[in-house]
Image 1 (tube, rainbow, N blue to C red):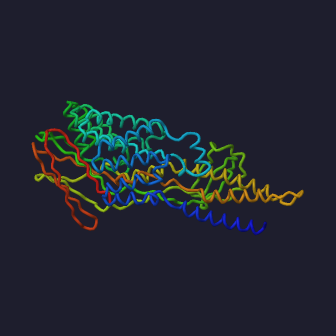
Image 2: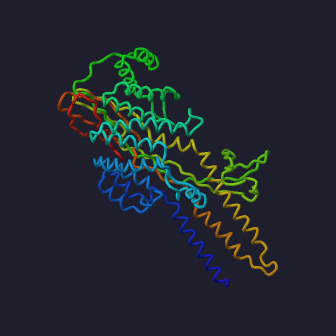
Image 3: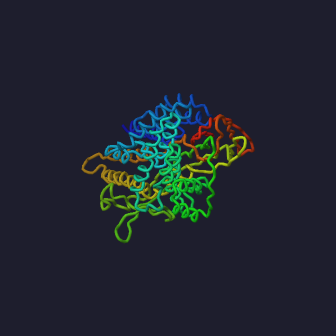
Length: 478
């Protein structure tokens, strides 16, 4: 009997070690073959890898699967199917995700086992790709609807926070895109409103910089040009003062203009980071968590139960995991665009790297409070079982079962604790854009890319100038 117990114990430790090592694998590791094909530009092969990945096929990862399918379909030019996947992702978000049982699973196991609900900036990027898809399919009315939904998304984001000034509640790039789509449709009034709203996001931020992006000069010119086009003299003068820029009316190019979006690099990946905390009772009787140096103070989350039920002294140390972003350096670091007469530079419009890092930091205390309180609940249960098992042999009772349960819970807590390292990783690290005039008829547009190692690469596209505003996006996802 003793030998069996020993073997069982050893087997449990071995199994626990194997599961622990497996649990250290990040989402990026488990979906690696797909992302390798994306970064290599082998998009058809990426789609095959995506379709056979068992992790992304799990119901809890459906949103991720749909966003990735939408993105890869867009990359191969299958705009109809791209929007079919993005619309399904949109529907999931609108219907609400998770629920009571999902919360229970997250409490008992870890956040990685919960339904993936998406990062806030990922939701805005769905609108970006959907809008471009509709424009490329000549479905301008649908693109307009998508543009209007950007405003609704901004309002929903704003309602989530009390301290709106310091939180990511509006996406300046999405508002710029909204203005561009209205301008593409010839709706100068709504284009001005959207451009103005985007500009005010920057103006209301410190140093006119919003999440790593300075206000583009192109946006300033768009605000002034559309204000002038609508005859809004007072608005024109107000923004001339705010921008410290004198507006000069210029003749519109006969062939219209091309808005070129350059999607460069790949979004950062999430990896697991470890922290060690203790549960401490304050002078007012309230509980809070603190790390060894006392540099991080995290409040106890009462939603997990009555804090008076916890014996703080029984929870000496907690190992907590939390995701951290790791940036991936883009291969290219500069680019210009030429129409044979003019050469223009790109301006950064969206820094997804910066958004990812800062929005994760903003919710650290709230999320870590949930993690630590969940761990405290498990730890308190272990403590109760260990205390109950101390009476082994009293009154002839054998408490080895309780001892085994206590050990089992401790082992389970160890192997199940895992940070949520999922995110939409085929997004670019950043998006830059520029506007270049077109001649009536055929235009040859040349993109010149420069790598960090000094290499040069060019891409040439043909565009027919129609007198309207047109769009083109190009990805260098490596």
